[in-house]
Length: 248
Image (cartoon, rainbow, N blue to C red; front, side, top):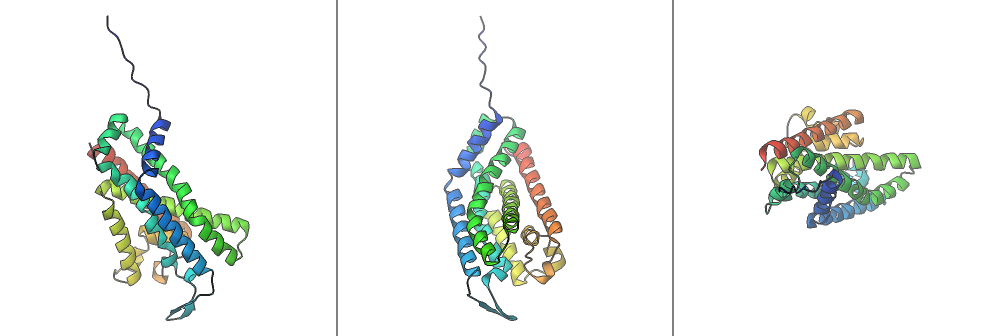
């Protein structure tokens, strides 16, 4: 007599819940949110104050320095890069594939889990600063909600870019170093061809917000949104290919 043992069915929501647990219990997640929250809130307070900073063209508030106001996102990107890179430590990926042999399902569930963590995390880090600056600029409620929505979308898209890079490079440090170095080199004027630099992920994201880092990197907000969206799509595609074709 043969006894057939049926394996328990693993539902997508179970996989997503497992991936969310892995992300939120990683120490880097709390660190990323805490640093981004502190930096955003501090910059919001200073930007809305009477403190002025000298420039070649006169004095400006901190809120008028787009690259500075955008900078806290690099702290937040610690979250997605470690969410991806931690899979390549201590045999974690092998365990994930054992639990979810269907790699296509695993890819989708990982992206869903990341999105479900990033969205509330981004809102938490952004809302205090955006409210402070919004009240200072006398924004209406719809304008304030639009502003928060735009910033949250940028944080999500840039997180997807960083997540995909971390998977392809199997590293947390490399994508952060790459994105951070590009930001420094662009703002310092070390890279030629400004017409092309505006299409880099961070520059496109700032244009999506309507706050280009300089006159030479200006794009219409809609084109900026499309550009950073395409970067996110390419990065997600790289993540999917790496997880389904390369990694074991």
